[in-house]
Image (cartoon, rainbow, N blue to C red):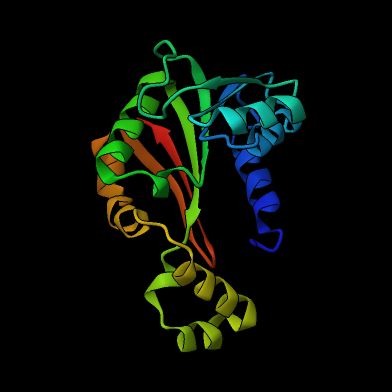
Amino acid sequence: MMLGIMKAARERMAAHLSQCKSALDAGCAGGKTAAALTAAGVEDVWGIDTSPYLLQHAAHDHPQVRFLQALAEDTGFTAERFDGIAASFLFHELPARFAALALDEFHRILKPGGLLTICEPSPTQIEQNLWQTLRKFGFKGLYYGALARWAHEPFVLGWHKFATDETFKAHGFECVEDKVGMPLREILLRKA
């Protein structure tokens, strides 16, 4: 459904964390971001998700990664355990209060100066009407705009309101990079 753009996005996330010795793929689903982290040279990679079904597939497909059933807002890891965390399409699945708890938990388990890379649906695909989207981004943009309106994502608008520089600062992160494109928004944060 995403026309192959997620592979490149996962590779960009992994590149941000390639200098890390340990990294967590939070909300790992089938483990593709965790696998990208391993391919980028991260030695100690873990993946967490709430779905035992997806974790079973992830463990089968990526045996070099350790997978664990856990919540983003309560991982169970010790403080300052990871150098980096990747969260791909996780936050827009959470109500704002749980997204805030997840940010606090990620801050807790990251080492000082640790990185958090986030990839989420872009607000651009919802903010513009379909005609504006077609004119600005062509038929591919029209596809993503229509997909965003068709898919039922009850917390995505809340995420777009929540995900601000001020919010990240309030949870102990400084924003290194924030790229809003079509159809993705990619954010790189550092633990302050």
